[in-house]
Image (tube, rainbow, N blue to C red):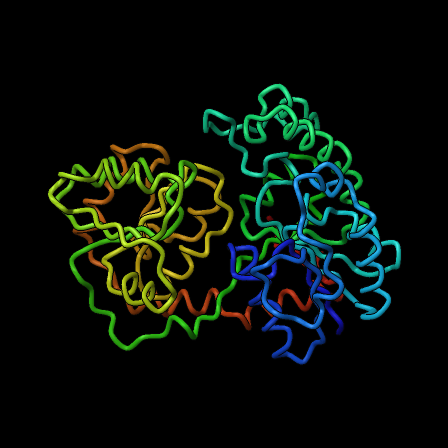
Length: 399
């Protein structure tokens, strides 16, 4: 088959980008022809398809790009003419590229599959959080005016107006009419999409995959510490974790950076040195640190979809202590591959860290089961069926 993959960025920026790059490699390994459509961004990987990429979005373009710019339409149509795909597989395309590309493909009779990495189709600011960082579902019923009222987009009236107009233009009915199947990486995501009025027959639950080979190891012994890997920000629960960890004697290694980096470092000073901030690390270092940790903590405070940080940790044999929010609980077999705690509760997190630290886990078995579950070949069978139109089998996985 000829498959055209699209995402706003084409480098390892976040989970959506990593997913698409992994999928591109997987499809090529199975002898499919692939092409890519993304924004021309400085950090992009080199590709022969970059000549079709629309230019990097400027501040001025933010007023037009979300609604389908002339440049995007012209270059995407040219790519469709030259590549002639059987399937267009979309990822994060809103704002920088816009769903206009779904309509252009659909009008030509090309099958359109869309993997959802966040809640943009339901929430104009994508994460279902209000300015005060509380969970919000006010826009789920189709009325997007709360986005304006609450200035949800960066606290800005102009940005919120653009987000509101974008959501009104690309409404549920219009998006459904040009998309054959929406891939939901978690059951939670599928349920929220259905709550927002989307046709459940078009929702296919498919947990993300990784290259499990990069997680293989011979030694499953553990050292005396636990770890956090991720962005140091409010929605990731970093503050709650530091609050809980500072009350315990156990060693915590923090991998990653973000807007709260300096603030949390200062808070942790004078706490006996039990919290160590390691900053950004490449995979080989992450593998070593996470692979020797007694467990990993995912303290998210937003509707986390299907975090790769959980999947990668388990494939290393590392159990996960995850917040009971979004799709995280679906990935954890309580007491076997980890535990869960009440999101936003430092007290419950503190108690569960103690439980995890003193619990006994079969690290090698965790790794074995995770590698079987998140294996790329398992995912390939499902996605290839979806590409040819077999997504309605068993009523969308009977979710």
